[in-house]
Image (cartoon, rainbow, N blue to C red; front, side, top):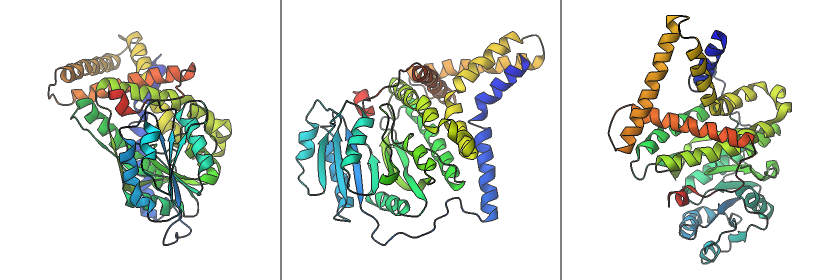
Length: 390
């Protein structure tokens, strides 16, 4: 029981402490050794390759025209650039709104198959005319310079997938959203270090690009941000997180929306990541496996480790003062969580406890998401965050 307690306790904090610490130390060694993480064999052409931007949309009548307007400057850089709006069985006037902007480089399609973002994406990729595919969401604002830099990076030898640095805005000063912002800043930092070590194995759905020749058909519960990067790595290419390329998105506002978003994300990603990576890559690419499982899978399993540590701790009370102290720390953490909930509920500006509450909220969502994923509850379609808030 003592072994199981310590194993669970260490595993619970590993993904947030030991793993990033090891990556940080490794990145320092790499820098001191003068070996760059992303080794590029060639420079792109001055004008860059043309791109096909794919924007899935479900009931985005109110926002799709704004999104198109943001992309026009990037389309103008090359007459072969194109924007594909793929409506995922919208029940409003999304298609008519998109078609109201008549432009030779814009096409508006309807998902020809069953509903779902993955199926809509697969359909749009079949229609794309260029090798460089850019995927972005309706609610994400992507500067033209970011698109240009992403295409330049993707045009280099050995690079198969790139993504922008997602900058989230908290539109209503929501405390849970603030804490989620801290989480995402940590996530962006971690991705940058993994890129420097050639261990980056994921991407950012709001703004990413991939070579069409490396894209494989997505399963119904898959998505380009966690499925496609694994296909890119398996093909022998690398993924790159670009810290100098911002794209702007909005954080989920409110604990309920944040919770739903996390559950949906983990329910889709947990079993999908393990299945797509497969047994064959566990040993063929051990460093990638370590990074992928440490970064994602073990983080999603953190709530299970926390519950195991608490359970074994209760059984070990009386064995040693260490277990009494450990239980006291865990109970203090529970008390801070309750304090964070009170602070959020009554809009109190208390220090630390809102972040603890947000951390626990995320891990409860991870717990439910993993359970849903294991028992086949992963959703095949989703409602955009802004529509959830409505």
